[in-house]
Length: 79
Image (cartoon, rainbow, N blue to C red; front, side):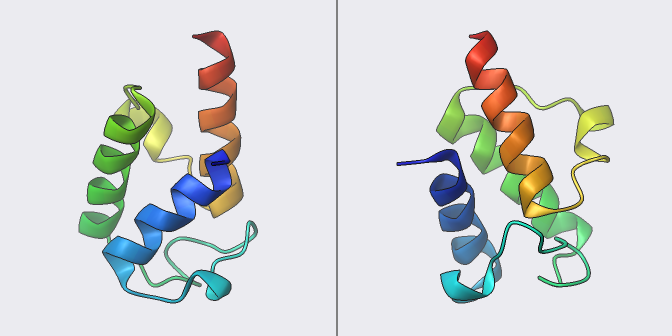
């Protein structure tokens, strides 16, 4: 499973939207209508799924699905 697929899976579960609607360029807040609680829950699940800690200061800069995927891929390569 790719990082993008893993991120999409979690977004589908939390926001209850079809996976087809989730594009890399989708903004978490504007396009996918995630509120701050949704985003916190998503980050917690991503941390569990990928075995990483995502600092709050970094989380504020993760605005699109692509931002999240690129951040996770970079961190996973560092492991």
